[in-house]
Length: 367
Ligand code: GLY
Image (cartoon, rainbow, N blue to C red; front, side, top):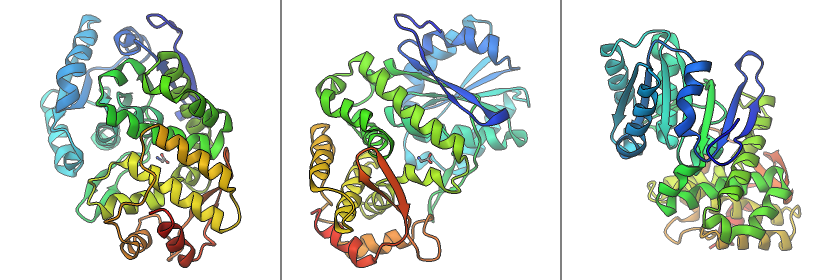
């Protein structure tokens, strides 16, 4: 498929009748109108985005779709994780009803991870489920949250505690949108890209190691390559284990400890930064278990440092609090924590045979 200057990359998520394509490249959004009209006819299209994205990209997308003659509405909600709740979902649903949304309408989730989670959750329950297409605009959403069908909102008791598995019909990743993001947000997303290299692809890890200055300069061909490789890895894992019965857990490399670090900081540490520290801690844990080499550990730390990601457990998160939070994570089953460990860069396995003392030692040695 042709974009403006380049051929768009295509990655398929194979899920029988729920299979879908991820299209990646620059200029994808400006060319989306015709594709939607031909491939996803709908009675109406509802672009859902937050207050930041709505003013810039939302209005543009609305005009693009209207110029194709598509009956399109733009709905927005206040930007930020605080909006990721049932009140936002109900308020958007009520707006959709007022504007005549029916079972043949289509939701277009335009934005970062919060928008994708809210909009897809809404689509999954609106009139018992209407189609949803993801248009992720942040790196984190492009390489992770828009792919794989996890949707959800938070409740005071915890993040993502209400949600569904609901696959999008298509994902359009316009890498051109990354340039409009705050730099910290881009760096945040790079933690997930490093994760894919660590768990499944030494080749991807080495591309990052060898090209981080160009990546940080958003060199389009390289960005396209790393987004495509990340999406391919995620697509492959999700195709084999859609509902996280087993294999999909490997996508949580660095996340178990990362979630505890995020929570201990009262969410002042971003997800990507917390995952970066989490990857360092579990890699230290793998060394303690005699399963990972010091040389590869140093390569991981250097790469994260070079990308501007943190690698030390924050001084104000004490080990006892982190351990308590780890054992309260929603993924902790019967007091057993599943850790994803890498025996080398590019390979991983899941184990719950870890003693809490070893986790404490790993956390303490990453300060
Ligand atoms: N972000 C992890 C997953 O989608 O399973």
